[in-house]
Image 1: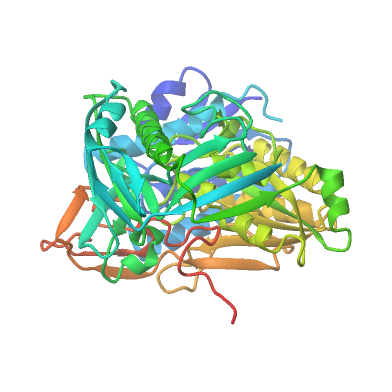
Image 2: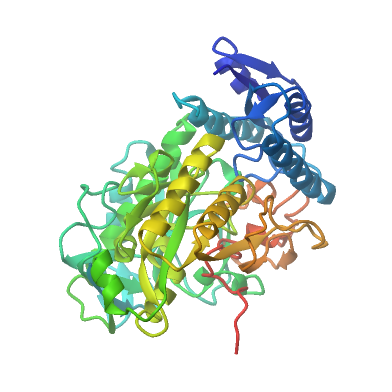
Length: 128
Length: 428
């Protein structure tokens, strides 16, 4: 299965850019990553990881990495529902309060945790 | 499997020359605790502070909370697979220092750690404002990698709780409660006319600072399995210092799981408590499919007629919660869910990130988005440096006088999704 990672986290990009496809959305926000994934779901991609993976709230961490893969022709409705629910949940938090301008130290912590979530998913040998 | 839990009530904590329990006061030897913590060379500094109910004390950032316990008889030792060898626990006799805790605190990846106030208006949201707390403030070696620091902090808390628990080994408990679950077929026959009820316990298992351990096994690696309820009371499940402060299931909450406690309280009266199915909350959707399939299969196989499901965390775990709900319901089993809610400040948005039609019975443990104010405290154990970066905090949360304005979710266990909190609705 060809995995494609959509991320705005430089650590994820650096670690996996030579292993699988990575769409690196440098300087993009959390929601931008979800939108990019949504667009690809409508081009026959299927979600492999949960879009809200990590229980950090969408207005806390600026980083988001999601793994998708190309599915069969047509649109996977389960993926559509999940990404739309996730976008609605993220918008809810960001409407109340925007993600703060964190210090570089804290941004580094958020990148580390986001990478950890993806590392655990990437270690899986079988995905079906 | 049968466990006698001896409850030794602790009403005060003091420093002393020897770690011991005398007339409901826990004395702790500070130097011995520090020595124990610094055996781990990943930690270069440790201090011990005491925090009692009613004191003007704020503790932050809190990583884990652990109740001191000790195995007296029955084989195995506390926290098997973590700080002790792997051996079956959950039978025989265990003593607990009820009313005392060990709290780990100190710099870490800061945002998922929260606050405990020992007095004032915010104290009422947190069960640990009512316990006598031995607070362990730890300091990592320079440039220690985040995962290693998390591990070192977690193990330090467990070791100190086990060390303090030893003080209760030869004390006559104030109360002894007996819990027993028989092997499946015998248990079904014991109360043949009562509904057979199971508990599906979802363990946080997403990655760094989102983990849980069962007999030392990272819950990410589990496929759903059966557990006798008493195993959890001996520390078979340990927190990996998880998720948001408000719904963090600390090791204390595993040892004192209120769902298990309440199911036992009604066992043989109006229900037959059959046991616990453990499952996880992985990030991979294929894992969610597999785990929810197996959870439903186990519930059916064990003959459960009704099931309570609890989750840990928000967002990703909501999907596991709903998949479990749907698949267990489709087996013809009645399901009640327990969770907390994040409906936004105005309370008008969806409370959970996912839902299914079968989710028609749900107990709420509160809204984590509510804003509360914390007055300044005379003493801070740990540091307030991270308040604005904690979940629930925000830029401007910490005022110059030390007071705080933040969302309720910054308070440890304030909306914990198993009901061990102050916001649960109660019928009268």
